[in-house]
Length: 279
Image 1 (cartoon, rainbow, N blue to C red):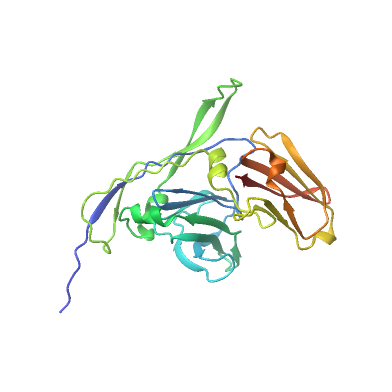
Image 2: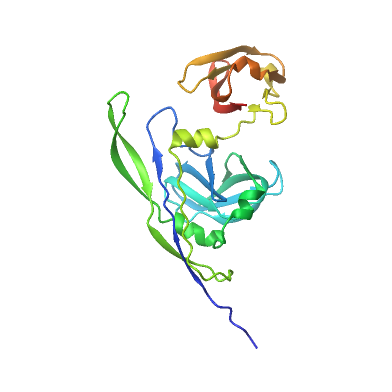
C-alpha cells in the first residue's frame, strides 16, 4: 500500500533589492562572485559574460580545495546578472564555486568564495523550501534601469535595480503548512563588497592575529608590489617590493580599523584587486 504525503504550498515574499552603480565597485564578473548572508540564506551573485551555456551548477564544500558537491543549478542561463539562493547552508565555513558546461561540453570552473555561517543563524532560521524551489524564485528576478542623483555631486546617472514580487513555491518535503513571509534585502554593490568581498588567495587578514598575510609562491618570478586604499580610494600604504613568499604586514600600519582595498601588481601589471578587514 502506498501512502501519499500531503503537499503543502508556501507563499514566500522575497523583497530583494540589488543596485549596481557604475563606479570602482563593479558587479563581480565570472570567475569572481559576491555573497550576502541574511536570515540564514546565502545569496550568491555574479555576472555571466558567456553565451551558449548549457548548465551552471553551484557547488559547495566545507574546505577550500576538496569535497565539492553540487547543491543545485541556476535556472536563468541568459548572459548577465545571475543568482543562486542557498537556503540550507552548513554551520561554519561554506566554500562555493560554480561550474559551467557549454553546448560543446566544455566545462569551466569559477574562483572560490568563502562564506562563514554562524550556527545561531541556522538555529533561528525558518523552515524553507528546498534549494531547487528557491531557484525558481531567483529565476524570476527582473532588472530595470532607474535614474539616480548623487547627493554630494548632483550628478544624475543610471543604475539597475532588481525587485521581486510575491512568488509562490511548493515543497512536499516539509510538514509546515502555514504561510511564510521572508524578506531579504541585499545592499548596493559597494556594501556587498564591505560585507562579503571575494577572498584573495594572495592577500588576506589572518583570523587569529588580525595581521595581513601576503602569500605569493612564485615571488621570485616577477616584481610584485602592493598598494592599499581607504574608503575614499586614497592610497594610505604601499609595499614597493615583495621579496619573500610569505610576508606578514602588521595591522598597526593601517592606524585604524576598517576595510581597505588593495591592488596587487606583478611587473607593473595589475594582478588582482581585493579587500582586507583590519580589526
